[in-house]
Amino acid sequence: MKLTNEDVREILQLLDATKFGELHVETERFKLTLRRRAEAGAWAQEFQVLSRPNVVRNAGTRDEHLASPAATKPADSTAAGQIEVRAHLPGTFYRAPQPGAPPFVELGSRVVNDTVVAIIETMKLMNAVPAGADGEITDICCENAQPVERGAVLMRIKQRPE
Amino acid sequence: MSFRRVLIANRGEIAFRIMRTCEKLGIETVLAASEADLDSMAARTADHVICIGAAAPSASYLNVDGVIAAAVTMKADAIHPGYGFLSENPNFCAACEREGIAFIGPTVAQLDTSGDKLKARAAAVASGLPVISGGEVRTVEEARQLAQETGWPALVKSVGGGGGRGIRLVHDPRELEHALALAMAEAQAGFGDARVYLESFIARGRHVEVQILGDGHGVIHLGTRDCSIQRRYQKVVEEAPAPGISENLRGALQRAAVAFAGSLHYRGAGTVEMLVDCEREAFFFLEMNARLQVEHPVTEEICGLDLVEEQINIAEGRALRWKQSDIVFSGHAIECRINAEDWTREFQPSPGMVSYAALPAGDGVRVDSHIQAGTAVPRFYDSLLGKIIARGTDRADALRRMRNALKVCEIGGVNTNLQIHSALLEADEYERGAVDTGFLQRFLEGYAIHAA
Image (tube, rainbow over all chains, first blue to last red):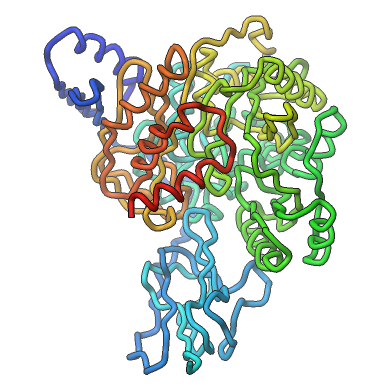
């Protein structure tokens, strides 16, 4: 590629001396658009490296592939008084606070609204999943340590009558 | 010796950043990338790319044997670990030594001391640096007792942690059990070490750190950075030099950092993080980061050095190229971290695909980023999309340039925190400078009310 920040800065110094407001450069290796934004008196760059990666084949590559997001159990029509606990973001579903530790909840566990029932790990953050209702866990729909999509049903809770 | 070929064991903006310096120095680059990053900007720019495993960090970027095997296969004479991942892992550093590959960073013993936050605390005390009262806790009961002595609220931190991960604020004994479990889980998942310690929480402190460089014999400092703008212990905006502290205090911080690193005979680039109580002109040791940091560009902008170049020079076995008196500071620099997150939903991570990226450019503006239209933002890694750095003759000038830079920055396809940065940099309290670590949370609470 060999187009540095300093190069862009130099191009902009040249452009600043002209009345042009936009510049497009495209080579085999990269594409650069520079656009003057009147409102801020500042420049914006759209830069794309076009060269293909030079990947070394068959060296150190492993054949481990990640499981695709877990197929959650078919969404049985949720019975009356049943509350679904859904993933509020995509990530990896964990039933216990750490490997080897007992799960937060089991089938039949009694929970209240803010009981932590699971963890979803996304982008290095552990996000606690609250039950969201008072009642009893009647269904655990995902396997531990499986990827889940946003909105996936994780558990079902039979709500305690008011 | 001079390195001929360096393997970069990292991803994202920092892989791309390290590569820039290697190119400048005429060093060939090999990128060790996971399956998710084979088409990244860094991969497209590296001289060679080698796949080290599946997307999950444990299968690739955290896999010591895999990364070492890649370096051996590619006959790299050195590895740059960037930040995070294996950068502060003593086992990885030792494995490099065994294979005769230079590790661009400190020694095994230094990583061992800085990486174990309890050992680092002890070393700080030994070198005359004050620490916040606290200590290791193994059970809820121990934690309860210690917090009773040091006072509520308390912070639970991971012994093997750093970078703000695995820290939980606990207001009262009732929250302790839950907080301890989550902190231990994050510590185990993030650092493979579930040990935690507890420290008394100082509400109105500022996070000020000192950049240092050592060659195993001497240590110099490259001034202060203020990183008080944090959310959940993650830095969001940084600047150099730290504003609004007396020259007396600045000198004391810098001397303390040099004394601490000197006591370790530190080799490489590192940062001594401290919590400053401005009213009392007092400061406490937080931790030492034995690596390049995300916010290193603000230091580079005020002292004119390329920290990656200095790291490489030291790792090649040469002495520091500069004496303390050679280091001259000029101007002021501010950095905004642009993250893929949804600020309207509690800053939830926002993985996906960048569809459009117009980034600021021009005089006094630097962008360290790996994104372009088509860049994947995998859910396996942290949410940093890049950093905008603005440099000015003084703080007001740098701030003005940053505000303009943010106005022209547009990123599509994923949610970002750009709007928060723009609003934050307009806040009077930020403009005055010298805010404490609780400022951002208070600002966001007010902002949410207005935006709602």
